[in-house]
Length: 164
Image 1 (tube, rainbow, N blue to C red):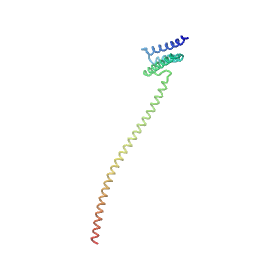
Image 2: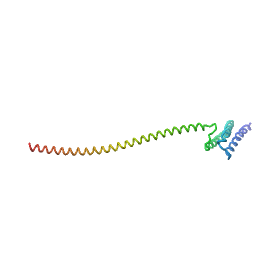
Image 3: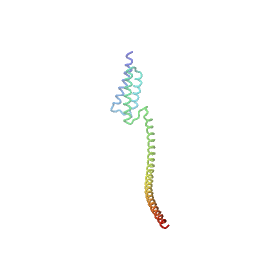
């Protein structure tokens, strides 16, 4: 009975070796060999489930590493992972990019509106500053006229006392 797990482990090892040689092959292209590599990964996963104890943990770890290497090679070559979520993720990515473009257009439009409002605000601020200067000059003139009116009142009071 001790030979049974070794036989299963050797099945896993055979698939693992075959996948390693496929990935390391100079003629390997994810776009043409992806289905074969995915099939070997699926077999490795099935074999690793049938193992027990530390052999199982080791096999699952190796399967995970090989899967990551396969996915990485597919991503770097631009090929989608067969049976994977690559196309679905690509569609989601395209949709997300479209939403981002719409948001960017909205932001650009809002920025233009804000720039217009800032220009209008600057004009109004300039007009207010000009009006403030006019008001200050008018206040000075009113104060000057009041001073003259007070002086005239004084003179007229003195004259009325003198004539009275």
